[in-house]
Length: 92
Image 1 (cartoon, rainbow, N blue to C red):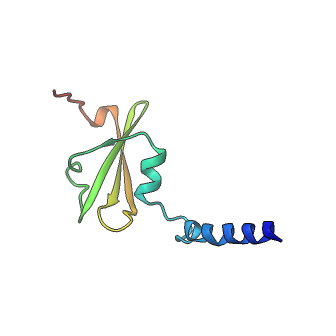
Image 2 (cartoon, helix red, strand yellow; image 1 turned 60 degrees about the vertical axis):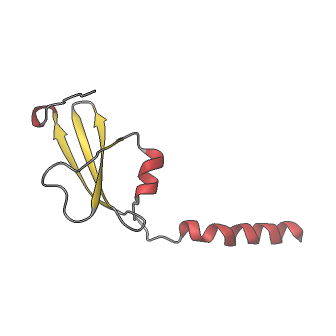
């Protein structure tokens, strides 16, 4: 009987973890699962409203992910830039 009660209590504790809308992607999920670089500011033309941008590199492309800056920071959009679309500048 105790095992059943413990299992039931465990299920109730887990419910909030599954309560968000299906398919909703938030920054906390991205942060913990995608290697990325935080951008100080979004590239020109991407910042519409209060948003933050993160960049990932994949072979010959950079992908800029845009998230709302408030609340649980939902995903807004992703933009791909291929090697002919950008110049990489490193500063110290």
